[in-house]
Amino acid sequence: MNDNAPYGKLFHLFNHSFLLLSGLLCLLPFVHVLAQSLSSAVSIAANEVTFWPVDYTAASYELIFKESKLLTAMGISVQRVVLGVAVNMLLTVLIAYPLSKEDRIFKGRTVYAWMLVFAMIFSGGLIPLYLTVNELGLMDSIWSLILPGAVPIYNVVLMLNFFRSLPKELAESSYIDGAGHWGTLFRIYVPLSLPAMATLTLFSIVGHWNSWFDGIIFMNNPIHYPLSSYLQTVIIPIDVTAINSLEDLHLVSDRSLKDAQIIVGALPVLVIYPFLQRFFVKGIVLGAVKE
Image 1: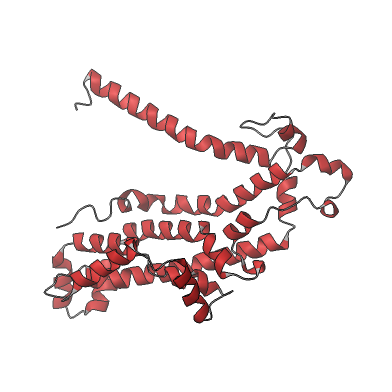
Image 2 (image 1 turned 135 degrees about the vertical axis):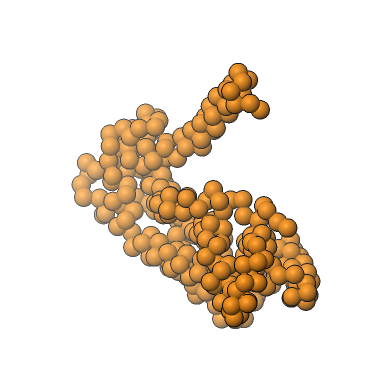
């Protein structure tokens, strides 16, 4: 469509307006939750809060951060994200590299690739997974949240397709210069794959941070819950002893506490995303160009 034609300009105007409206519709519920978390209990009960705080107060945040369990759960989630993302990306790259080679170079690669696809579609089930984790002595351990999902097969498939889209001549010239597979992988493939790796890193971060079910089934003691599991199972009640004065009671409600917990849970991902956004446009089409 010609951009200079009247219909082309009308299409772009409609397209931009539609995308802007869709973005606002996705953003407004989060803004509403943020506004309620910063509003007084009286204003929330009276349904006066829309998209701007009424009777501004940070009492809900002050109260939830006095809870040592929430801070402990947040620390466990940070530990899980750091270890989990490192393990995920390392194994993703190490598995995707050989599977991206042709059959004449890595014999049987097609069989291994289909085994991964089969494992991605069909799982052993929750009970065998629980019994395996229990038999390995990983219960109540941070590794029970990391090792069962150490190989994200979907990410491996995306990564190997991205590797296959890279020019073969780069690897061949590296071999001629005397580099082996390890040198070719970490000196050629990995630097050229930073946009794809940044995108998969973001996927892995969001997956580990938001995962809550495995924390509930693999942790016998709630003190070991990551943040998402803690927020899923525990609603912080109003502790009168934690409030400085009776006049502050009208500032905090269960609703404002829930909203504050939602904001606290979502904030780390919102902070990390802008730093990876510059890679996201390139990485989102990873694997789209293949031989």
